[in-house]
Image 1 (cartoon, helix red, strand yellow):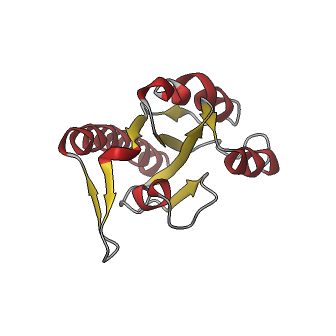
Image 2 (cartoon, rainbow, N blue to C red; image 1 turned 45 degrees about the horizontal axis):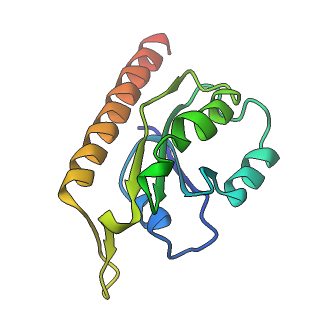
Length: 142
């Protein structure tokens, strides 16, 4: 079984981005709120501290949240190139979720609007399938 690492680029521990990353997955999930059409400065600071090939041998799922669909391309044009430079063999399709589609109730539970929830399920299924294929190959090689 693979170890899960989820990285939140949000400066707030109670942000929608951090809450979104609490789902179960195998691999590296990197989530960030989008500010001014790019990933957060906090995530940039963290990625800058990591070794150049920190993601080598790992499958990565990028996720982002933001207030407007004008930032939907931030994953592919801002985040994906940085992640790719860190050496992962596979970056699965990511997903951008509007802030308004993520609701946090008073008891702390999270609700994602049906359309966004379906899309998130699809990208996490693709991520899981990529990891399953990877772990099967590693087991055969080992």
